[in-house]
Length: 194
Image (tube, rainbow, N blue to C red):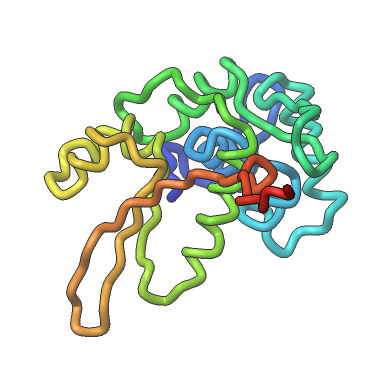
């Protein structure tokens, strides 16, 4: 999911700031998924790192205005959610090999996109799922836009797609479209009492 870094080495120094490879991966991750909470960031990027380390790295990126945090009122969990800032987006463009990418790097639907991050995590645990491409990757990454088998996914604006491979080597793409259903708005048939 993460793009190849143009800059090699363990640490990248940018004007009195050192970014680790994991920090750069977080910046790419936030561009592709648009939004994530600390639990998702810890699970997907800073694996096997102490919670204090993850919090320190996130705080450093926030203080340098690379990522922003907010606590939405309408979400089930009280945890902070993180996304890229404009400065973080510009840094993403410098650090990755993405030639052309959209300026759409923030989520319009927080709950929806946070759930897609968890769906991505569950699907990537399956042995036959080889790749997971987010909507931002499908819509904005030139190397995917030129692939004929993905053009329909781009045109229909799916939330994501996965590349699956069977044991016999057969490879297929499948669309992911997540639409949450609220059971509180269902109307159930009622008996009329006479």
